[in-house]
Image: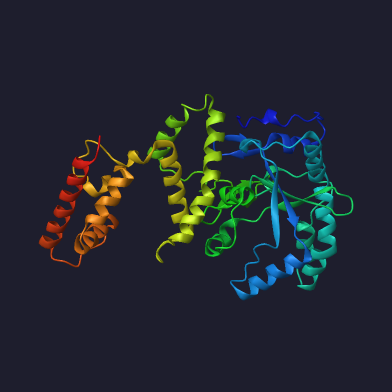
Length: 368
């Protein structure tokens, strides 16, 4: 289903800024999309203490202290009913007043105790009647929670980036990646500092503002690969908005598999978890849309034969690797990974030639 803004069919009130913010969605690099609304669900006190003890015994990250539930994500075919959407709009509407009350209760005494000048405290004090805008939210995700007494939704503010704990998430084999966590990784991971843009105010002063929305996980492809992806999506989706939604859905579906592959085969020390995860995500989605045979470049001169092993059927590929001697296997792995051989160049050439001859023999004998 296309991520059109008409998906939020709420009673229109031109004077309600909260409804306008929720209905207008977030601005991406290629258009506007509906917000993804996640609810933070607290666990039981016993489970919370267990998560804290596990964090102290391991790496300090308290995974399992809470969970997330998707309330509304039209781009991913998860639609909240009208009552839930009205509760979300109510949480957005009441957020400025709650934020101002929290500042007066906690942050103002905190900064006064630190000796911050009163003029600066006045400048950073949020106003209870100041509407939220898209600039107040770092990511395309709205994080809410249910107030236990009134059962009303409360907007917790901008969700935290998964950048700071992606490496810990990969290292923790016991933490599962559900759909909500996959969306958080998709929308908040970019592996590099946020971009700084300067805005000119009415008095002519330049004010820096951090921009977070260009997530590298939503755009993991090189330009030529993205062109191929876009052409492949035309066969399954008619409009541009449908193709964008389909691509985001595919990326979210493949994130759990990418995390599993990183746990099974961690990246080398010289490469970051973010860069390897982005690369594997692009390869996984490309394999799903374009097929593994895309890795074979027919007619390309000079392409080494071991680059085409991905297109060999699985049964023949297994027979081929079992037939290799120890030296042939070592030289083939070195060639595929671009490592320098420790053997004499002539010996290396002979071993690779023997491996190639074995592959030809297995392919000739394979049934048609």
